Image 1: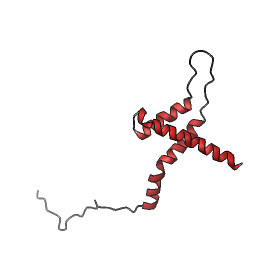
Image 2: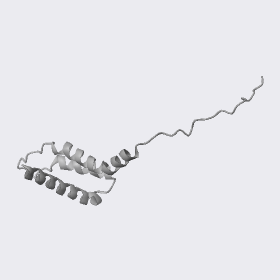
Image 3: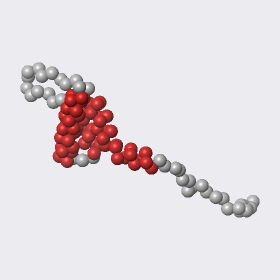
Image 4: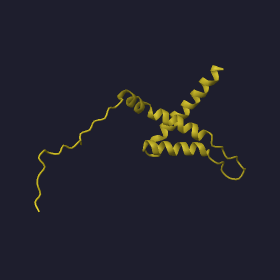
Length: 104
């Protein structure tokens, strides 16, 4: 049994190129953190706060705790390093609420 080589070399299509909408890609990348924070705030702000029963320390706001944990995971920083981001988001929320109130 003999093996014969093909007469023409086999061309591989390993260098396929795909078009990219670079304007949309750039905009998505530059707005990602803002959109993430807005979505995360909307999701966690609707979590009901547990009522204080009068025994021991008052419970922390579960929505704020989940927000902080998700933000820490998203940023991949230690808790100390995201403290400033959490404070900025709280100030931003207050500013947004103020702007909404002055419109009416």
